[in-house]
Image (cartoon, rainbow over all chains, first blue to last red; front, side, top):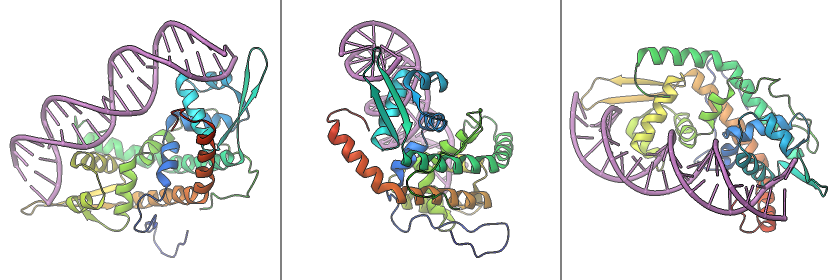
Length: 136
Length: 136
DNA sequence: CTGTATCCCCGCTGATACTG
DNA sequence: CAGTATCAGCGGGGATACAG
């Protein structure tokens, strides 16, 4: 990014000239998904079996874990290795592309950490000024 | 910021030690929201009135525009200025914090652009190998 | 153990109508 | 112009049962 301005107020970034949907929605739909993020974060710690993953990601249903993993596999972010043992054994791991994604998620986490207090404070102020508005 | 790393085998980033939800979900829920992103991108071009905004963000309903703006305002990302004219006139603009967010969105867009081809290719391969799976 | 198949409910969203 | 109010439809996600 190119910075060239003074003050503490950073100029807005030019995100995408003219063309709104430049394919970023596909990624955002993943990054914005709760389960996807939690699963990727867990896999960032090492390869995991299905059951281990489900116990590690608190509250995820079998169905959603399967769906999430399939989508990540489809995107080439996660690899799936089946060992033809009895009982079956399946190892999930981040691919190189998946590891790239952990950096993206880290960037998001960092930004959240940097601004969480400011946002939380803003919300408290707004909620106080707009009681019973129903906005969340 | 430079999310990009060496090609091939980048080590996974340590996203959040032990504590899954470190408040990043609040941000992700916003960033993952289609309308939020589109509205912020439009506002990054300058301050906008309600109607102008609605015409600029293709397909957004009056209801969703209002909801999106209220949430952004609550988070301190967008400012709302009412001019007591007739007819009413309301200007929306990014706050300094909102302009920060455009940089975050740009980071996401950059990452998407960098990897969209790899992801698209992976999807094509997967879809071809798993016909009629229903995964999206 | 690792999934797939169904059912079903809740909440998000769009559409519509109305107001200051 | 800039909203608010209300309702109806659809789909995401949980719970459950079953299969390889």
